[in-house]
Image 1 (cartoon, rainbow, N blue to C red):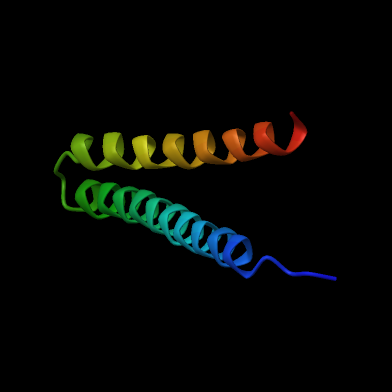
Image 2 (cartoon, rainbow, N blue to C red; image 1 turned 180 degrees about the horizontal axis):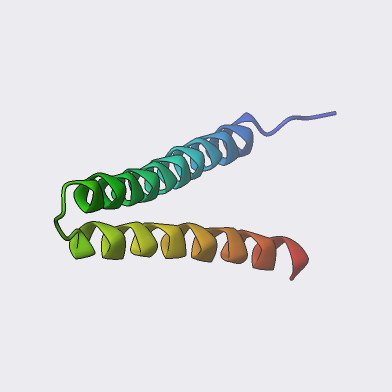
Length: 73
């Protein structure tokens, strides 16, 4: 049995970067929605924060859908 360590390391690296990126995007989305809550409590408008939050969530959904597409196809 021969293990291709370069390929294993490549898969590990890509998986690590993808995971950190998705978690970061989701965190930014949650923070954007939290800014909406705090702005509405103070009587202001946080349309930019909400738009950014929805964009982050859409990017997460697109990345997950692409991953599922890669697995199924």
